[in-house]
Amino acid sequence: MSPFARFLSTAREALYGRHIPRLKSTGDTAITQIEAPERVRLAIAGQVAVVEVGETVEAGDLVARTPEAVRFQRRVHASLSGTVTALSQEEVVIEGEVPDRPPITHSEPDWISPESITDTAREAGLIGMGGAMFPAYVKLSRVAPIDVVLVNGCESEPYLTCDQRVLEEQRGEVDCGTVLAMHAVEAERGLIIDRETYYPGGYERLLIRDVLGRVVPARGLPRDVGTLVINVQSALALHDAVCLGRPLIDRVITVDGGAVGRPGNYRVPIGTEVGHVLDACRVDVSKSAAILTGGPMMGRLAERLTPVTAGTGGVLALTAAELSRSRTQPCIRCGHCMEACPFDLPAAYLAETPHKAVLGCVECGACQFNCPARIPLVERLQRAKAVVTAWD
Ligand code: SF4
Ligand code: SF4
Image (cartoon, rainbow, N blue to C red; front, top):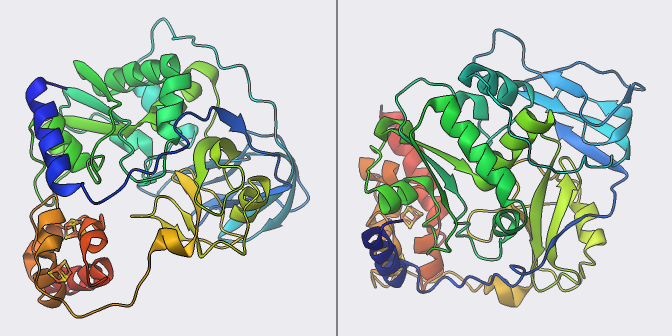
């Protein structure tokens, strides 16, 4: 990051992020394998299962794929070795054992074509692990000229430190994944952005603006400004797929919050139920006011049967005090919501009066977090976006 970009980022942090605490107490906790779950629930909506109930599978076996004619291809692989015990259009349930993870050694192939990297990413079922869950092979295809690959390790949501730990412990593999991504899109530069930033500075449009000074058009994509952004764990998964022949079957998550007895960073098979994570990490349910998958700003309320997906950065068990919920009050026109918005959007106005400017809202929640009246601005902005989108 250039000194100017760093100055800009720090200034934005002072302006926008001052009220959002980082709460990253697990940053020094080394990654450990979570206690083995008895079963996993693999989401396969829109795909066709290639296994049957009663079938025995090895971890890494293909269990579902999209039909050939579908534009964006997906693949799902078994994350446990065991038996398929249930199957529906929505999920495959496997009961069994966590396989030994092959030793993670760095072994960059001598030469590999950009097409083979893309094909490997597709067949390994790689998807965006920053939360977008979009098939990675599409981003890695050369559909537009790309000159820079940014590997996003900012992790600006409070509590989450899993990407930071992956960077600490598996930097060589992430570096290799970055080089592979650069090779796939024929980019000249690759940057791993590993500094903490203000919330929501890790959002890819802001990252591109802060690091490269490029502005992604309102309805455009990073590739429109010659940039590919991938998450740290996506880069690691690309290394694992190309260099170890390993499909995407697990990820590192942060488990934290005031109700968690054993907070930390855990490697978890994809499809592990949140209930298992809560039990393994000694969550005191009597203290917990909300269980979330993801961070507190953009995460979702979860239940015990909710599975950990490739895009799940964390499982949080927050106390009522941490949620600091209070009753919604009328708007006092203080303007804090607009001051907090990284895109300078007048959130209070847009939440009440649908205007096409609302389409620039990324639903980051910074405005809502800073609202003293506790107005559910994100929900209202989402509704306004739906109204404006219907105008087109
Ligand atoms: S208006 Fe949208 S983009 Fe701006 S702070 Fe609120 S949620 Fe984030
Ligand atoms: S921060 Fe809340 S109270 Fe203040 S203007 Fe915005 S919506 Fe109204």
